Length: 281
Ligand SMILES: C[S@@+](CC[C@H](N)C(=O)[O-])C[C@H]1O[C@@H](n2cnc3c(N)ncnc32)[C@H](O)[C@@H]1O
Image (cartoon, rainbow, N blue to C red; front, top):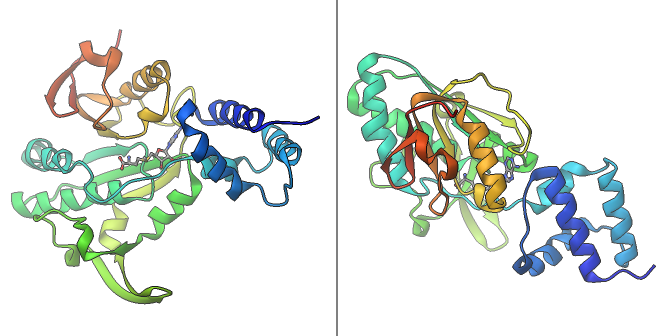
């Protein structure tokens, strides 16, 4: 049977949706073509690719397929105002009560987001002369990025201004110069104290429920991942996730995401920052 590009793209979209909940829209065709190239190995034609997709549907190479089609863009202190809010509003409260804090970073990608959270806690402890201990659980569906985060080694470019003025990277990273094809590059490796604050786990936000206890977390970061889901699925995920947040806990969403049906159960305290006021009925 002669397959077309459209057949292949439709099959990929269907498969990706069933495995992850990610909805690829019409304008993603170039992205899909580029990513199939990474996946297709010995495929010579669309028929071979359809066979490969059939085998993924039956359970082989599922992880590789998912890892190929996730989009992992992130950087340290992305949407810095969320970390400032954590430092200035949330953490002083924990310092005063001398309580530990439990944080879930629910689409942690290559780790820059949970490490930014950990650095923020460390800075707050210095500012407040406190000793807040944090348990940060970082989850993602993509096993490659989870491994990257657990390794904690990043390329550092002075021009990319990754760190805000209130963070001194030398307090948290060891520098290493590495020779590369384009010359020398600076690598930075997360120090062990910061690493100890975080555990990385695979988790699919599209699952029916999550492996946590109700009201387990004081803070949930769910940023720049909902945008990959349909509006209806975003709402379902938010409702599932909400039950794991304590009353009074904070939910941080990405810049183009909104709390949808949760709006009646939260108080907005800043740009895409929401405090849980009631349990969902
Ligand atoms: C664009 S990154 C956002 C990273 C970070 N939260 C930030 O704001 O910089 C989106 C991440 O969501 C993850 N992701 C996509 N679908 C997922 C799902 N169903 N369950 C868990 N993580 C998912 C991807 O693997 C990717 O690492």
